[in-house]
Image 1: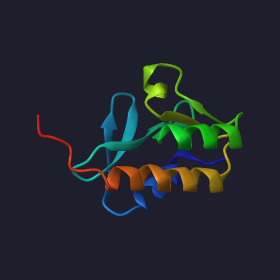
Image 2: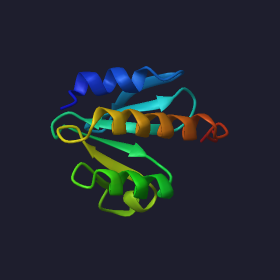
Image 3: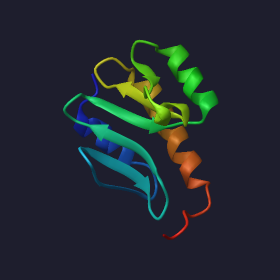
Amino acid sequence: MITPDSFSQLALSFPGTESAPHFDRTAFKVAKKRIFATLHEKSLSANLLLSLTEQTAFCDYEPSAIYPVPNKWGEKGWTTFDLQRVSKEALVEALASAHSDISHQKNKPKS
């Protein structure tokens, strides 16, 4: 099992990552860019933003622990990771991918 504290440490280990409250979750984002992961401590789960190709690959790899968010967000690549079941290796790889995808995007537009 991956604890919420372990997840937070892993997410914050990527360059330029910061955390902030996000509704009933903690969000992790690359500074001045979009959120790439959220942590929901109560349910011991995290949602990561993956490409649709990556989402399919991770879900196929550990289907009992990794699955698309069951709504429109899931169709955009948001993927749930059950921290009680997911392997640390899969989680670290997915976090690296989600962080990299956001890091390489242009800065988000100012509203």
